[in-house]
Image (cartoon, rainbow, N blue to C red; front, side, top):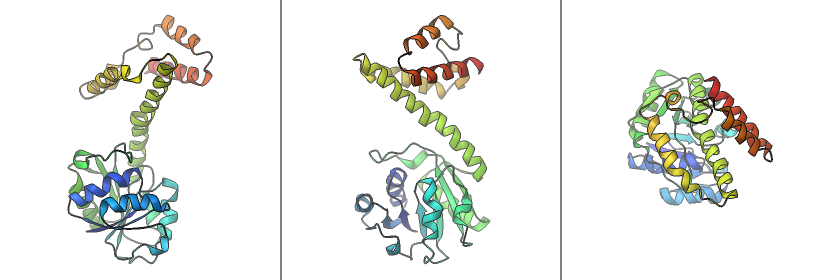
Length: 254
């Protein structure tokens, strides 16, 4: 099928090569930032535009890889696109309804993975969660998802929102904790690389143990002597101190 990418950010950067590898054709990339559109279009060998009025009306699929709060706005600006074209968004937290305002067939393919422009993700085994406006469209959306990954599951908008919350805890919050650890280490002249063996083993345990069972550290041991000392040491960093207290209390309760 022919795809037109609406957005040229983190997700689109990995989806474009995955679509091409599956035999699909990317015919154009639209982004409000022309440099971003050109960067991705160059890798795809197609046209780029930053003008919504110059988006081609002839693609089979319009794939929305945008910030959540602009998906509906941009979709509304594409009324000239033939009604037979399929609109699909890739968001974990946005309802399918945002693409259904004009009665168009539409769907969702949410790839649950962390994406960055600097790193193209191999989509072969990335779990993708699908939804569609009707049964026939669901068949098409499912086939499209299966063409880029072997891990496809249907999921409602409500279920996808809860999945996204879980992903924020598992990925975004844990990565932020890495950043906080890096800052604490650098203040002592120590490299973040010291944490990598610990991070790797924690991740390996998640493959074979329930996270609650794998929990270690002073909070799960209720070692208040250690946690109180840590809290005292963080007195000059009240925000970090609050985070430490909240995380400690949460571990103790769980």
